[in-house]
Amino acid sequence: MGSRRRGFTLMEMLVVISIITILSGLVLGAMAIVRQRSKEHATLLTLQLLDAALQRYEQDYQDYPPSEGDQEGIRGSENLLRMLLSEKKEGPYIRSNDVRMCDANRNGELEIADAWNKPIRYLHHRDYHGTSPNKHTYRLISGGPNGLYEEGAKGSDDIVNWNKARPDQ
Image 1 (cartoon, rainbow, N blue to C red):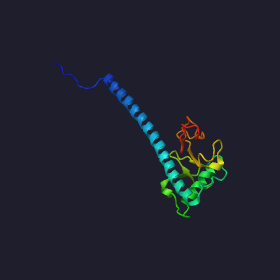
Image 2 (cartoon, rainbow, N blue to C red):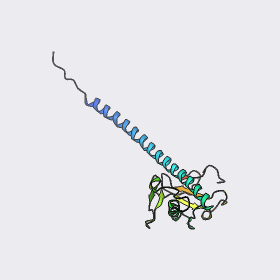
Image 3 (cartoon, helix red, strand yellow):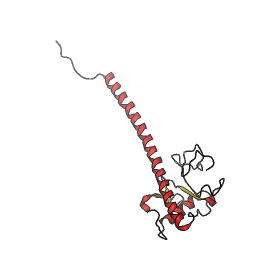
Image 4 (cartoon, one colour):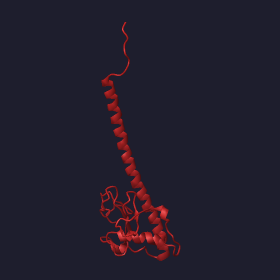
């Protein structure tokens, strides 16, 4: 009897490579979703940290830090970082290693950043429109995954410190 060679055929190899490719594509896709969700969660935790710090600041000063008349919230974010790092009264209200920082407008002043390294916008109630100042004393807004600031509109991917589902907020 002749000797038979053992091994894989070309077709078997192509099938195995195809299966491995499909599985790796699924795994990489799932990892991208997990990475995105972890950034959203990290940004939400930063907003919660800032909420707690702002409550302590308000107890000391009977108001929240001003956002300097800034309708967009970038200068407000710069001022917020400065005020929360201040050692006056019971400060500092946060430590610099508690938050990410960036200089989005490249003016040499740092802003508090979200997980995508974009500034978290801060608005004191005097500087945003459309709602009663007594409803929200300040707003914190991250542009979210797409990086676009949609003023925290319902249905946007913005990450905010209020409930976007309730229109009265």
